[in-house]
Length: 218
Image (cartoon, rainbow, N blue to C red; front, side):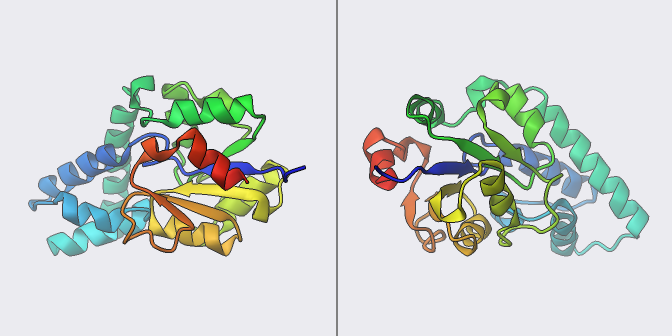
């Protein structure tokens, strides 16, 4: 009898690509403050909290602001981001993910979401996946950001699984580090060089072939 396993998915860059919306909202914010913000610079904000992201952005633009003004800008950025999110549809689910979830359902393998985003349930609802996850851990459930393993440990708890029987799918290095710290198998989606600490790396979500899934389940 092979051991029961469960999956925990990050949201952004794994299930859907909302990174582009974050980028547009941050870029518009930078432009409103009178400087440019590039896609390369946007890489610095990957997996980073909203508050920390603003600090990085202001440093890039060499802009100093009062705490009040910063709060206003954080709200402004999130409001704009949510306008993009509210227009999302099932077409935004990344390639291969629907097939992967179908395979897990057919084989009675549980899966949870483990995301730092407080907007995770809204995004899942927009793309029609909200009811498919056994459990959802989002930014409202955690006090420590990745690479702290808290988000994934709560996910394992909600799935009634031991951490070592969980498989994490992540696109950010902080997420891979969090999975490794939680003693879970880590699958990185993206650049193999950046994600070299992951147990497996797929260049994109189409790498989830039936053969690959069966290999990691065994």
